[in-house]
Image (cartoon, rainbow, N blue to C red; front, side, top):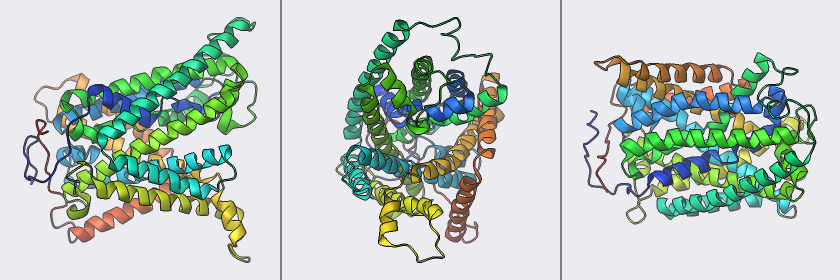
Length: 481
């Protein structure tokens, strides 16, 4: 039976409330990445025919609706279980379990693809070191840093935010010198927002559907509710402010990029387009931006592992997953140590598996089989990141839809006073996420369906055909230290 938000039922070690509003905002910015649009700038420019700024700002407005729902639900349930808790408490425990299981897929894939991307980028800087060694290195670093405790991770986030901020400032300075030092015609400064020669509604909407993915990760803030000071206030503020800060910063980054490199000029490499843009403004920035993106993905992987571990902790404490393992907290560090290690192991094994699956596309398995030479080639391949990224959004969008429905139920359907402010944001947030989910690629839907089937099968086994209790909630009091 569910307990009230202010009730606890156990004297076992709890998570420690040490994160300030600033810590939460920095965590959100690092997970999303202050250089978020740089990695996909080339793809966005091609899809939107140069209207990347318009797409980024439109996507920001779209994600703010879901961010508001997350913040409001965190006020009601300051729990590490996040969307899992919100949906289970406001709709049904079974729907909450399904939401939590879909989030596990999202949260597990995030550190996995960050591991793959970091290993691939590090191999470019140190080609003599095999990619598989870099995978092991990054997973070990992620895991060891997160085991040390949440405050350690918060300090690292602060340092990385400062370093990335310095690089972004350098890009803006170099861009300003380039832009104002070169001749340009009429409409030059407004063309990134609207170019009548290339504008099409379908192109901008298609670009926006990709640009929305720039913001995925802001929901990770709500998984830190039990470690945040005054979570009923700070989670909402941090979630909304993170989206706003990332949106404005991202819009500025792509705006100067489009001024430097018009959409009419093709990029030498779409995947590293922003590096070429920065290099045109100032040659040394080509390498600096490469290192910055490596740092950004490192921070994203580090933060994503925190979110995954705390999601599993929330589900374990509520008995949706085996409590003895997933619901345990280390007495010294106050960190769900078992979950941190498990996420690291899954990231490492998954990084190798994704490379192998991606590599199979280029080999005829009906021939002589997978030789050692072919295996090495696969391990150093670069297709795995895209394969993992395609699958990541399946779980995230299900969770977003669930949170919007939960906010609608709690603050509008069950409320004595029907206010439009509690109706419009969750409804629009749900519809936008549903549209994006329906447009996911077929491989992502197939893998997601398999994952969901496995989770539902586990839930059926655990409850003997859903006849027993699926979850038993233990929502901590806000005042606990």
